[in-house]
Amino acid sequence: MEADSNEQISGSCSIDFTVAVVLPAGGSGERTGLSTPKQFCTFLNRPLISYTIQAFERVGWIEHIVVVVAKDNLDLMVTIVQQFGHNKVKVVLGGSTRHRSIFNGLKAFEATGEECAPTKPKVVIIHDAVRPFVEEDFLVKIAVAAKEQGAAGAVRPLVSTVIATTSEGYLDHSLERSKYRASEMPQGFLYDIIYQAYLQCSEADFEFGTECLHLALQYCGTNARLIEGPPTLWKVTYKRDLFAAESIIKESGTTKKMTDKNKQCSGTMPAFVDLDNIVFSHLVETEETLSQTACVVTGVCEESVQLAHALQKTLGAQDMQVDVVSTLLRSSGTFNSKNWNFIHVAMNSSCLADLGELVKTFEETGYAVLNPVVLILVHLDVSEQSPTGERAAVLGGVRDLATEAKQRNILLYGILLNHVKDAEQREEAVQKLSQIIMALIKERNPALTGQLLWV
Image (tube, rainbow, N blue to C red; front, side, top):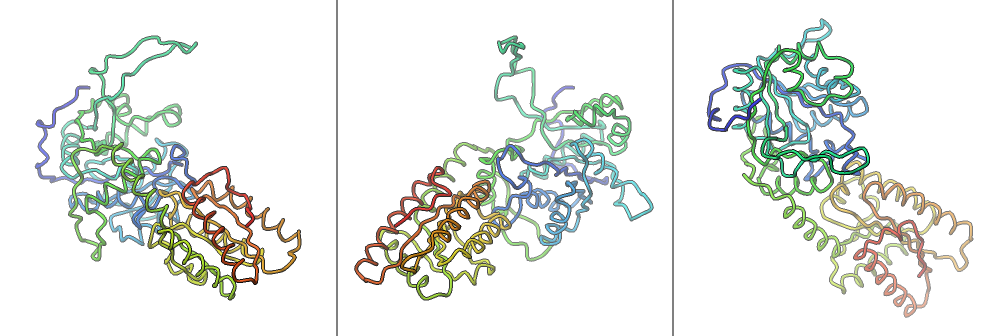
C-alpha cells in the first residue's frame, strides 16, 4: 500500500453515489481514568459523541449514520439521538470486540425481515466516535478513493521512532520512521467488499484484530489507497484530550444552538492543533476560575441560612465570588451555569443523602468531567453536646462518599463547626471556617478528602 498525495484526489469532487457511516462507540474509555466512557462525556452541554455525529450529519450527501454501542449504553444513546435531534442516526447493539461491533454496524444495512433496514450504501465510511473533528473535504477524498479503489484510509506521519525490544527489556532494533505511517480514521470501503471481508473473518480476527484495511486486503485482495489526513483527525484518548476538544469546539463556533434540526454548522476546525498549548491554557484558566468561585448550598433552617450568608460575606472579602443557593433549587440546572466549587451547609446526619444526590447530579450532567470540583460539607452542630454516635456517623458517611466522589473527579471534604451563641465568638469561628475553606479550594489536596475537620 502506498500513500497517496492530497492533490491526486480533489476535495471538491461531487458525490453521486450513496454513502453511509458506521461509528463504533462501544469502548469503555479506561485510558481517560473516568467512570464515564469518553464518548459520553459531556462538555459545553453536549456529549462528545453528539459532536462527532453532528460532523457527519451536516454533510448533505451522507444518507445514514449507524452508531454501535454497548448494551449498557443503548438507552443513553437513544436518548442522546432524541435530545439533540440527530435525524440520520440508527442505533444498534455492539459486540464484545471492536471488529464484532463494526460488523454489527454493517449488518444494520442488511434486510432481516424484522424491521426496515437503511438503504444499503455504495460506500461505507468507518470512523471512531471519539474523533469529532473531521471535515467534509477530507470525507470526499476518502469516499471517492474508496469507490475507485475499493478501500481507502487516512494516515498521519509518525511523531516518534518505533523500536522493538527483546524479552529481557533491551533494545532490539528500530524502524526507519520515514517509511512508516500511523493508520487513522476515517476509512472508506465499497460496502460489498468490507461486508464480504467480515463474513470471512476468523475468530482470531474478531477477537484480536483492529485494522479494517487489513481485512479488505487479506480476504478480498483489495489494496487500500492511503491519504494523508490533517492534524485535526486526532482521537480523544486521555483526559487531557477532553480539555483540548472543549477548547477547539469553543474556538470553532460549533457550539451554536441548533434551533432547526437541519441548520448547518458554520464553524471550521483550525488547520493545526497544538494540544499541549491548548491543554495548558485551559488548565491555567480553569485553575484561576475554580480558585475564586464557590456556591454555598443551604437548607431551609434559619441557622444554616445565616451561616451561608456569613460565609458569602467573609469569603467575598477575600476576592472570592460566592453565591448562595437553596438545596431546593438543585434540580433546576442552576448548579451547571458556572465553574463553581460547592459548600454544603447542613445541621444533621441526613445531610449525607443530600450530598450523595449532589454528587449524582454532577455525574449525570458531566459537570466534573473536565474540571476537578471541590465539594465541602459544613456540618453545623447546634447542640451543646452532640452525641458521639452522630458525629461518627457523619465522619463515616463523608469517608465513604469521598471515595466514590473521587472517582468522579470530585474532591469531598468535611468540616464540623460548633455553633456558638456569642456574636464575637461566632464571627471568629466563621473567619476560621472561611480560611479553611479557602485553603481546601486553592490547594485541592486529595490526601485530605474524606476527613472531617473541626473548627
